[in-house]
Image (cartoon, rainbow, N blue to C red; front, side):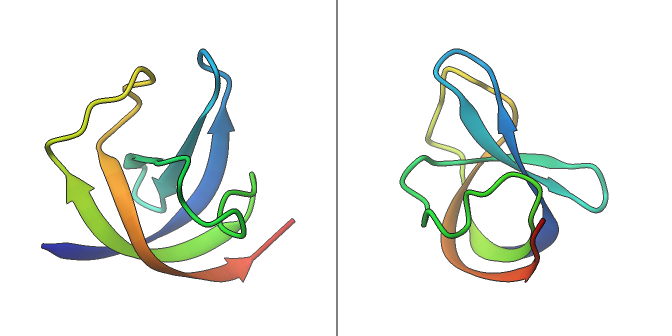
Length: 77
């Protein structure tokens, strides 16, 4: 099932580092390192469409993993 969420990209200094999308509602999704590098920029706001992966675990464990299918940058710092 696909979802679309809007939020701010954050880089977390956990272990080797992790990327997160924190939604406007305060929900945190972990973004895979394989996501497009144009999306993985701390501080930018984006609208992301993807699939929540229930079958994936990470070492950061900061939230459900959101496999990005598409995104639109709304604003960047």
